[in-house]
Length: 361
Image (cartoon, rainbow, N blue to C red; front, side, top):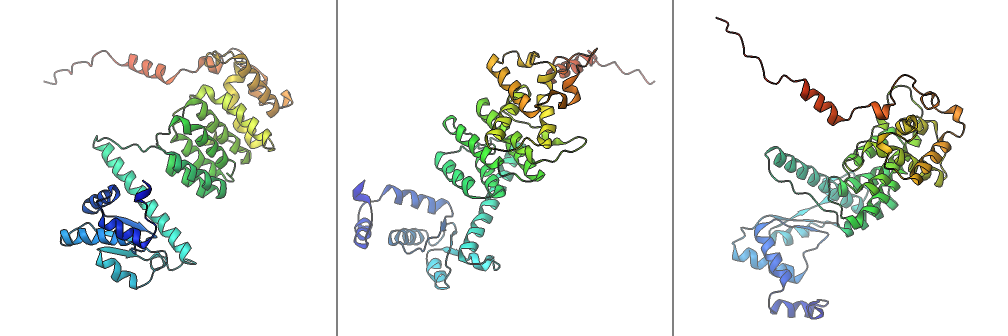
């Protein structure tokens, strides 16, 4: 309500003399049951000071400890804060190596966020082990907007850290999922090292989206592997676990990754080709006719084949497994058993009942 807005000292006086405001009631409730953290707040607000004084007087000072993080610490803050049972945190004192107040303040807040995240994770793990219900956070729009600003302005480590803090094991509302996928692709484009790829893969594993958006995320990760140099032997970079996307979708995601690279003006590197060999393998060996791809419409087949031709313009340069069929052996996409089938085979191999031990006497 416009009448409740406070702009001047006289407005403060009028409000203090008036009936309780809903925010005042909520603040009193929090002061009685919780410790509060004031960030960048000078405690000069007359309304807040009056509320703090009332609570302290009514309960003889027996209220939960509260804290304030001072941006520009001054020793006289201690006396003022102590009057209301508030402890002052001096970032420059905690971080003597900081370049200035801004640097110390930012690093202090980051350390606080990191500690809070670790504590929350530990509590959720403890609750899980005890069989309790875990609180699943929900991504909200203003958090996503802040995340998008970080992704646009910061380097890979900072962007990915912010991304994972806001999306790992979160419920992401349907109307925000496209933006989350686009933010991931923007971060993936900043990847520069093999370690970056490992961190991206971990983020994919903890990200739950609808398949159409998960496909975009997977394609972004695949496109990022263009930074790899070609390696011999096994490389875990091609193994990607997504809770939202089945392995048969890999060829389609890989095709979109090629589209991202070409559209962004990036070269198709040998490192990417090595990974793409694994991602396209079952599709190529079955000529797109394997049971996993039976439901793919004709435009999808055309799109995948077009991107394969871009990765290997000369068919003779394709990996040997793509050039010559495995005569005498079933095609992998038709031959490879599913996990459920393997589990059923193991179960059938168990004896129906265990033999009765012989009498040792």
